[in-house]
Length: 568
Image (cartoon, rainbow, N blue to C red; front, side, top):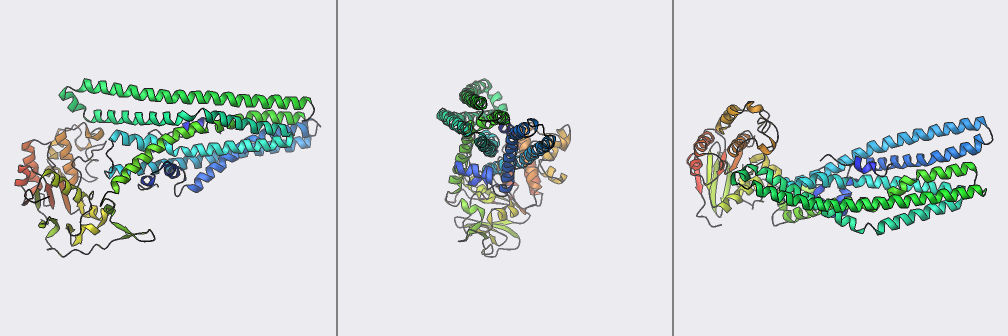
């Protein structure tokens, strides 16, 4: 197994298989464990390591078989022994090839699943709004950092295979001549000590380089998102200057890390070359003195050449750990930060489950609310004031900005409701749980995401044109060259702000939940179109709650609750 080819093979193009798996990786050790030995991957990972170890063992057996052929078949001129020896060589090469294929296939699957588990963990936390880090930094952590951390599996597999090769070579050389085995052991120890002694700063430099790269990604993502605004304000040149400055810092950090890694690689090659040279000189001296046979000498030389790669791999261990450790540290920092936000008062209750003493999750009772009229979909209680949300009607709620944001978080499940605060169809939302609440209520964030793809793909699988009209998105579709098939670009950047909001409105109206809650849905839409949207929502016949302070929207509501006089 090559000392350098495998880590490169392991790099992704862009880091348990469930979204909660990576969220538990709050330490470096846990991040490595999740990326390498997560549940359901242990048997495959063990099979891969066994395959690579078998491959290296077969490689060691090749020079042994050649030495046996020389001593037992060629030297005495025994054709029968030569035939058996050649058959043994065929078996060795068959094992060598098959074990590699088994190890590589199982390892690739284990690595891909580990990377996926870490990536899903990071993105699961980010999508639940449990982090304030920039989107670009989250992208770097969930992609390159997750890939690097999961790639620690290849380090384990490579080191296990290298150790197998060196151990098998030592045992073989011990049988041939014990001084050769002692030379291999001493050379391995010296190489490990020397390389480890000079690799102390590599971990710190690797972490700093990855941190600066993530910061650069965050800056570039922010600039790309606000490029139109920057251009309109005349700030594009200043933004470019800042990007160049951040890029220079990231480049310098990467250069220092690469320089340290290159120096370590050169030292590792030098030491392994000296070990190989020492073994060859010692084997030649023993052959001249008649201590070992010609076949033994050939075996010793072949083993010295064979284990040169594994010796280098063992020497690379500190550098590989340093590289992976930086990424694992960043994932652990991210999940600790998210965990701290999730552990805030009431945050954990968002999940809507209660853990019993055995640690099993049980769904809480959801039938504790007092009955409400059949024509009322939901009942909201705010500081003693009761707000009924009637089926098929548009209900407006006007309040101070902080109150509006708090209600938006309540309906979306980002804040756990107090008992009796929100009742959905005679069921207390405090006991519905996060998934139960989302099954009843669709409450997208004010800045909901628009994805790369067509307009239709961003709305629904089956388009209802009446709902396009209600959201005034039908006018946008008429202007698009390819209509609903038009590509909207990354994050919808090919659409204007108002067009994106109308697309998000159309998406909300296509949702199956019986209650739709919209938080200031028309802030980027012109007054004329806003009035059109307000009329369309009123005529839609859906149960809609508008959290807004905009008069044109409130004027179209069937009922408006003004909470500005309610104490927070």
